[in-house]
Image 1 (cartoon, helix red, strand yellow):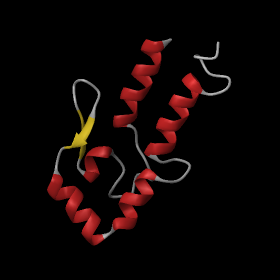
Image 2: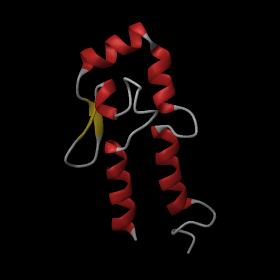
Image 3: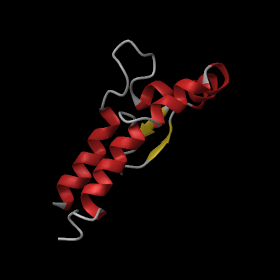
Length: 89
């Protein structure tokens, strides 16, 4: 179960967030990369800086809302530690 959870978290880095026509639909589109150990880091600071300066709402939208990266991470974590999650079982 824990391996499945880890796999689900890792897969989030390659998921599409937003619509296919959005310029910021993947983590890499905003300059974020996932390391081989599963950690997220700034992979392209110029891309992230440029987006934050030109259109901070795009970055905010990527991390907020019901279909956002943060919402997906929260869903996976809730499946483990939520009131009906794996840890409670």
